[in-house]
Length: 271
Ligand SMILES: C[S@@+](CC[C@H](N)C(=O)[O-])C[C@H]1O[C@@H](n2cnc3c(N)ncnc32)[C@H](O)[C@@H]1O
Image 1: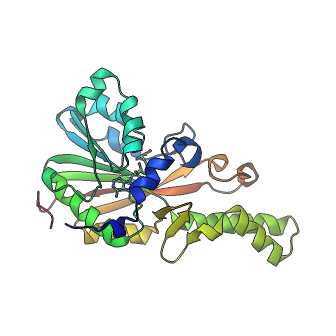
Image 2: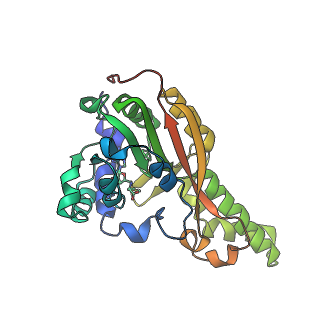
């Protein structure tokens, strides 16, 4: 499977650049105030000690200690060397024994075909080119054993539209005329960085896919996944927006959690 450097848009370099300040820049789905269905889904996997889990786009590795404590074997993959460096530093010797690091893009999984029980992609299915996303999803499907599961979280573009809506309402309630309220809400939600129709975010060289729920269903089904279920990861407003505490009366913002199976076909290699 060939993906040209052009299709990857040098995103590995941009992600490496963000590794040092990662915690300041990105939303943390593991915070104590976050409602995250991923924990229960991981907990529900039976007989985890006999299983292999792949953390795809593991980043700085916040999940790795937990995964190494629970699963027999952990594959930690990321294409950004700066991220893997930080991820390695998190593990004590016992955890490190269970974890194999792979420095590569996540559409390159042919050598792992049929070897993995659970694939995980938290905030990492964000390639700006959907052709790369589709290839990646097929590779992940090929990597899983029969009965395997794919769990993940993707950034939500519908949540960004929701931010604009609540900020606009709030500005109107405070007496701003509609034009000014629109301008203020757009600025607060950083609307200019997003393309709502194609689901894209572009900021300082980093280009990311953002998802609508119907697109998650569509792309996973097309890649051969079955029984795709969605749920929301709910964030406290203070984590999401600078003036978040003003929004505490509104339902929380979200990313999309998904869970998918592949009960039918068994392992296959990917072309
Ligand atoms: C937002 S971070 C999330 C990291 C981690 N999963 C977490 O939950 O904190 C996205 C990670 O995915 C990696 N990534 C993005 N696209 C990738 C690709 N095509 N192949 C491999 N890694 C990728 C980035 O380098 C980055 O470390």
